[in-house]
Length: 60
Image (cartoon, rainbow, N blue to C red; front, side, top):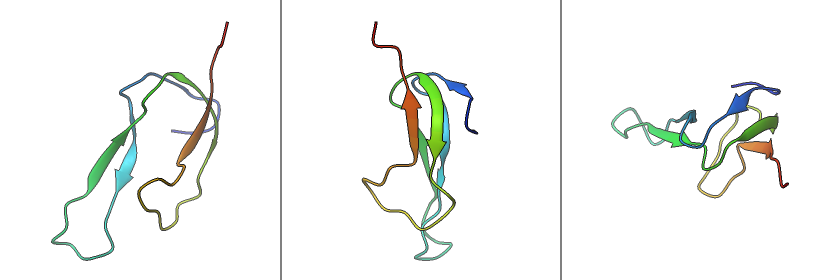
């Protein structure tokens, strides 16, 4: 996914790999709404509740 891409609710946004070790399973994260990707978080440590993407959506 990159800035300018159009996404649909349910599309894969990414995969979070725990730093606790390889025995922890990776978790897939899906978009909860459709829209146009306006920006995305740089690859970095993240935790529950962090913003990964911002979407531009039609409100009309």
